[in-house]
Image (cartoon, rainbow, N blue to C red):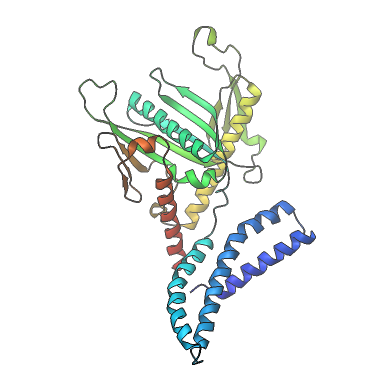
Length: 351
């Protein structure tokens, strides 16, 4: 049973925000009030639907004492009782603590793991998969760092993805992705296993993370080019080292000023991610049981080409439509991971 006192407090806060926004007497930043109001609206709607059911059930119980109304009440009570668990479940879902980063844009980083050239090719496949998924969501993908191999694979890619609920949809993609297939360079037809690492980091704003200037060492260096006339002969590449953590970020666009901005943007995202991980560690002694724990070394998914199969090992989900998945059809996987994480949160709240 959901505590009614808690529901009343939420409703009263929503009503206060509504009044404050209409009169301008709420104090503080109107944008902050509007964001809280917007976040609370779906919760209050679920509270209203749940309380209406309780009221209807109470009214129907009273009608049982009226001979004229009792038949109607006897018909209504089973319907109301059967609807109550669904309404309560929907309300519990709405009451789950929200990840403040869910609505943020994200930094997507992909690097090959074990497997040499084949791992680099697979890293490229993964990046194209996320690009296609972003297109279906109406998101914008800006590549801010890309290092390719001679065979068309990827040594490293860092991309900034903007749009609605980007981090909420992609945050469970972080981890080791494994591929099993016959490489194009394999003449004997043997299946090889290789891997690539994906990291999805919420974009950090200045209010999320503060970096002291004295904590940074900024170096400029010569960018490496493709050779011949494409060699960059200016010292435009930027490397930023965050001294307290040892994090190093580089950017090698042609503009040194843009490189500094890009490197700082990536550094903030990584520091923000470190801080979020630290808070999560303190909050949960057993993060291994949680989906999306942020452990970059965790093998989360296998893409098996001979069988046309994708398996997500965290939730034991297996789908036999690998081609569609690699073409960006990720909603079923992401929805299943999100539902699993929500169920885990609900179980934790019930303890």
